[in-house]
Image (cartoon, rainbow, N blue to C red):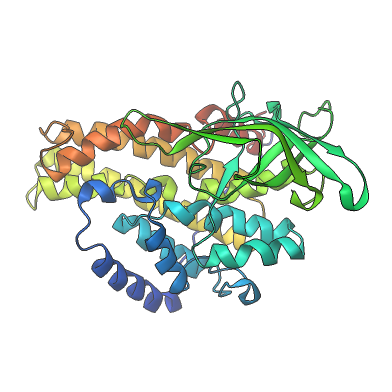
Length: 388
């Protein structure tokens, strides 16, 4: 059997982005100088609306969006440099993160002109936050099995959709203004992927209930969201009715391929290196070297996917590889840290390394769930390799 050849083409970030990198690095050195290691470990799950607004003021949110909507048409490489520096420094980016990463590009690509004018400028200012309504109870990452449904009522100017159902594990819904929800609008066909559409849902609308979920560390990043006869204007439909699956797979390429898939736990690597010091033993040197090599490989894979996205392609297979291997790396990191350094994790005290280690040990189980479970991702990878 002849299988397709899949490659990640080597990419270099253009040299002309280097001045931007230095600008961002200098800003972060000042803005985060008093931010402790434990808070840096929260990074893309840590929300700070004031910090997001400052990034928006500097033009570092919605960078690749057109200038007419508040963006800077800066190109994907400039945006990558900014994101990489923010995550490497442990900056609190969660407030604007989803809107900048995927909701803005989705609205630009599939939205109407009225939707672009209504939402994109606020996203670029770091003031408008979105969450993503995909997972549901008893569905998880199997989006084809979702049951939330929107039914169209009326015609013409009075037309509306009535939405009922539930979403779960919805990151940041408790402080976002809007959700882009994937729901059923037609019967489920034989291929399972038809009959779905996406809507922009105002989370303050009557009938919407948001309930935070407290995780193992006591944090509240995820939420349950309930829809009880929520009325949506016809203009809330984004893209084409019935083509939600095609739209959401393009969106997931943004979600699964970025540097957050291997840099969200970078604070632990930093504290581990600091704790080991300049004279590691043979085991420490070997394992930190291996971690660094894996990090470099993941970065190069992420750059290759960024190049495909910049070319207008839909690299679902490649993005799934980045997400899967990135999750493995991030889940291995706390285990390796404990194997090479005799320093126990500590909650509520202890060294920087001990506190960050404790935080990452509690978060690590979720790394292979968020953004698509390992089983779903490996199914996508298998199909891309012609094995399914």
